[in-house]
Structure formats: C-alpha cells, structure tokens
Length: 154
Image 1 (cartoon, rainbow, N blue to C red):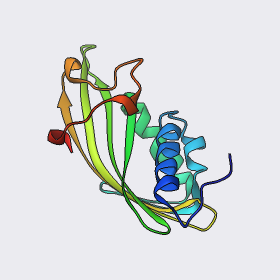
Image 2 (image 1 turned 30 degrees about the horizontal axis):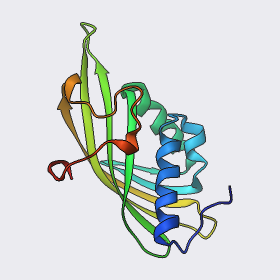
Image 3 (image 1 turned 180 degrees about the vertical axis):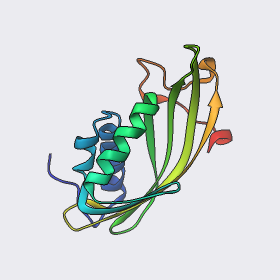
Image 4 (image 1 turned 135 degrees about the horizontal axis):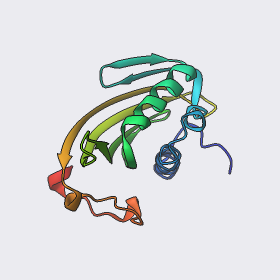
C-alpha cells in the first residue's frame, strides 16, 4: 500500500485514521513509532514528548499498565495536512487482589503531518471512566468498527 500523504481528502483522511487505529491495536511501541517523524512532538494529557525514542518509552509503559487495550478511532475533521480524531479505548488495571477494574478512555487528538505522511505533531486529551465488565464495548472477538456508539457517548 502506498503511503497516505497530504493533502487529505475525506477518503484518505478516513483511511489514515483507520490505519492508525489498527497500528495502535498491535500494541507494538517500536512499530507504532515508525508512523511519526524522528523528531515528532507529542502532548499526551499532561506528558510532553519529543522524538521516537521517547514515544517508544512512553508507549511501553502505557501498555504495561493498560491491559487488554482495544482502541477505536473515528475521523472528526481534517484539512490539507491535519486530522482530528475522536477515540475510545478500553483497558483494565490488575488489582492487588487479582480482580480487574475496567476503564473506557474517551478523548480527542489532533495530528499534523509532513509531506511524506509521517505525523510530526500529536496532541491528545482524554478521560478515563471506570466501567464494569458488562458495560464493555470491545470484548474479545468484537470488531471495534462495528460497535454502535450512541450520542450519549459522543
């Protein structure tokens, strides 16, 4: 597949979002980092990062904590070289007694790309909401793209 590069159209912006979704769902920090410029700049909530090495370190720690991580990204808006996404992901934290507390993280990201299609800037804002196992959307075997997300969650 040829790289998806700016300027984006509605079709290519949506493709870029779903490629990113699938890449993040691999939970492979080194693989994910290759989608970003070597000097990429990130803000992830209250954490500021620069460069692929910091991204790899951050994602490694993230996925050590966020067990069972399953993500969905939806296109929110786009311009020539920028894309905004709304995202939802679920994960659990292992408690000392062996039980699991599930969370759903809701948020928005804005992305800026260079002419090669690599992301040079990523800003993320998100909130974690505790949920029960019964309230999960992205259970094993579920296609994250097929889940109907109601207006109550948007």
